Length: 137
Image (cartoon, rainbow, N blue to C red; front, side):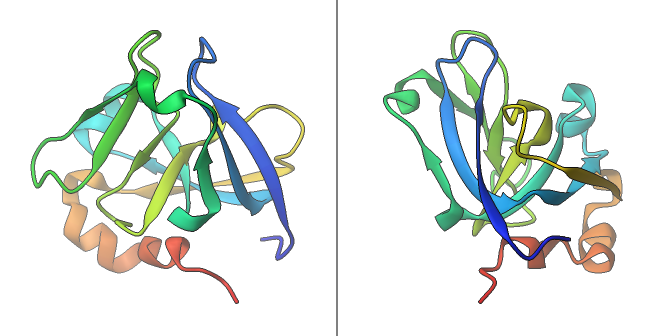
């Protein structure tokens, strides 16, 4: 993966929710099979929370859904219903960004990895996903 970080912008379908995120131009995205990610076909990369910023008045257009352990905070736009980012159970110190919601032009490479959300604990322990929200110094 690139060590050099770039600013990516993106958001939801209707553009009511907009954000920017600092991340490499080459990212590892997670194709998760938990019931929520699987049903939404949400494939996402994880960044430290300090590298993510909501823009403008985006917050007023967000709603949040939780289930199970209520650790993950699945955000979605109240207008168009799209989840462009959420706060994952695997990385409570991070933000999961739906890579298809990144505006064109800044992602140069996407490596897709599998996260077995149906067997969450074993996948969490085997994949190293928790390291993706740690600040790289």
